[in-house]
Image 1 (tube, rainbow, N blue to C red):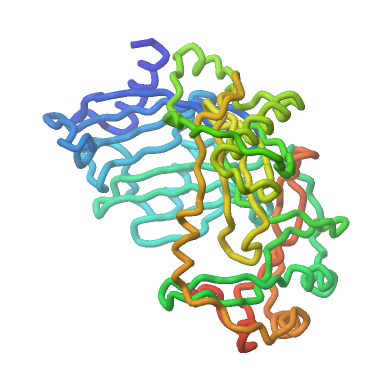
Image 2 (image 1 turned 30 degrees about the horizontal axis):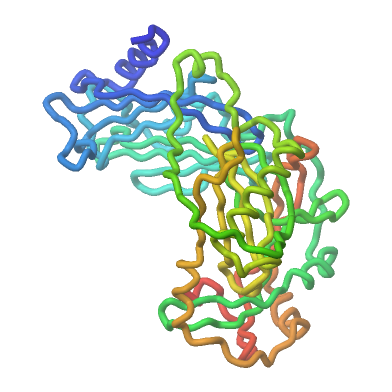
Length: 422
């Protein structure tokens, strides 16, 4: 075993009291965060003495999975399978919440109240989140710690981002709902919510979440963050005159990467951090169009290439359509390309997910206007301060997150809780 890995093995053995365990397996992998930074993880799987993998390949109860961030040397995850631990003189919390928080500070190097705060607490678990001056951040960081009845550690996880002072543009928050009224009105959109319980689609006016920047009221869409890696916006509609005959041959999508010890300990940037050039974009769009001419010959002018994204071994083109634009779930096509040859390897169409709504009862006639819906909802809007990362400035800016937990039934005019529609 490489001496650098052995050092982490020795550290885990001592820190977590794994004298009753043996090291069954170790592995390396890498991730790329929202800031396009590469981090390497060492995973150590410790089996309780006298145990082996179950017949289905799963780890035995009590297995200790310890993960370290090689870049920082800090603990990333510690999981005792099924909440069972056979550790001796490991991590035990004999005191209260303050002791757990001090242990988190020690393991992560983060300072309580400066970089993270308590979010939720139960008898055997605490959850913390990244905060700046008491204000939540996006993208955010999360910490979770669990223990058993003997107050022995059974679970620890830290993931996401915890901004440093030099990443933050501090301001005094002065946004109000009155100031944001014109934006709020625009964010009231009519969409079709599926009720799985009633097997019906409901036409509902709801608020599309958005961030409003504190200093100038510029807006930033609320986006579900994807895994790190270079992303390029494309917005290209695919059109053709003739289809291409012949079936497309799919190849297996294998996202496993072979990581060498030297790559990990030198923190070599992942290939997914490389920029996507104009030439890359051109070749990708051409390959995707050829695929659609084979597999979707009648769909000229329907599909749009929205983005290109580097993910592990592939360049992924994400396509969408303008069909069902009022649906909560929209048609999507993910096309996987070899980043060297730009040849399409495989694709995933979410049509099968959308087909489940075909049997749902359609929504009724809309009797409520957007203006009427806004009037009903305007007293229920929420505007919460958030520090939001700006990809261009490479800083966290102070914003207000505009949201509303209620909607208006477009058929009846009734104000409803959106969570009750499922």
